[in-house]
Structures are given as C-alpha cells and as structure tokens.
Length: 97
Image 1 (cartoon, rainbow, N blue to C red):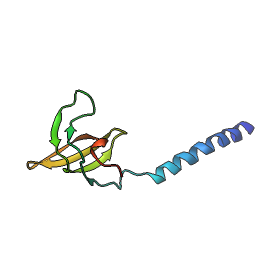
Image 2: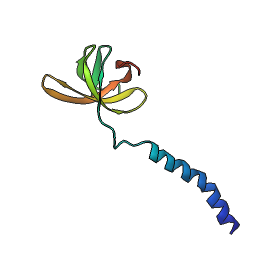
Image 3: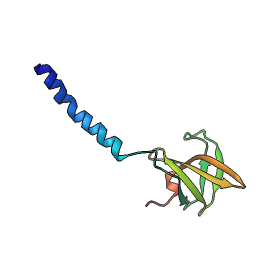
Image 4: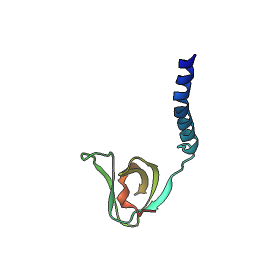
C-alpha cells in the first residue's frame, strides 16, 4: 500500500505540468499573420543549405506567416505574379516585435 501511495505522489507533479501546458498553448486557433519584410530575403522550399529559393522578396514585401517553425525559420506564404507560394523564411527578414 505504501508503494502505491509513493508512486501516486511521484507522478502527481508530472500530471499537473502536462495539463497546464495543454491548456495554455493551442495551434488550432492560429491564423496567418501579415508581416512586411525589412530586408531583401528569400522564400525557400526547405530548411537546409541545399534548399532552393522559390522567390526573392524585396524590402517591404508583405507575406503571411502561418507558423513559427523554430528559432531561425518561419513558415510563410505569399502571392507573387498571381501564384501563391508557400515555404520557409528566416526570422531575421522581419522586424522584431
């Protein structure tokens, strides 16, 4: 009986941390946010050195940021020459908020 109580007490903090995390952060409610690039930048098809450039954006081009991928990249989409392109951009292309 004592082992059961000890196990329950050991897992209680883990359960409370995981439930608080789920309630405070949700991807489901996110919508694309419009941002203007502050420098000339590229839209890439991936996040590696071998990724190809889908489009080159000049300063002031508006893109829709759909997701923050990691500390270096964001997933973005833009319309250029009547085509909608989706890919990855460096975070440094945008002004910090």
